[in-house]
Length: 197
Image (cartoon, rainbow, N blue to C red):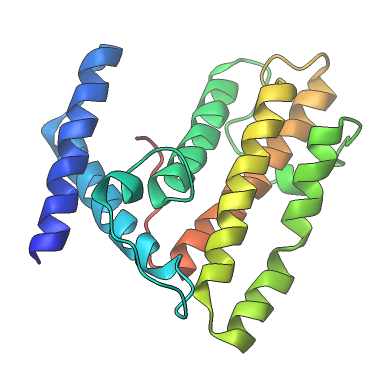
């Protein structure tokens, strides 16, 4: 219990610093719920991400980092996608309902779009592999790679500032597919997905 309490406490302190530095106004309920989800998720992920046959190295700083193979990194990627979608929904041209976008005709012309789509297609094979091997670190590695691949896509392919409405819709569909796969991946690991961090 003290391990989880310490993870939550450290996460809350970091979150409060980020909120203050960004000039955001968040409720106490938001801060405590995010700190709890991220803190506990970080501990779970740190445990599951290690191959059970490897040596275990424990570090609060590493497991709570927003960078690297950590739960906060994946949770941040998911929250970033939801932020992109909120911004798109606030524009007059785009519907707020993203559920149908995953079925849209995708326009995959950029290398970053193709890489993301290829990585998304591996998900079912990864889940089957984890089911057979009982090695959850394989799913952790996949989710980490997916988050990194999404970040590369996001850096190279503007979503809400895409050249055409069709391209914007296609990229929003890729975002929705990525969010869905990340949410399921984290859920299988017993980690909450947060809409905002």
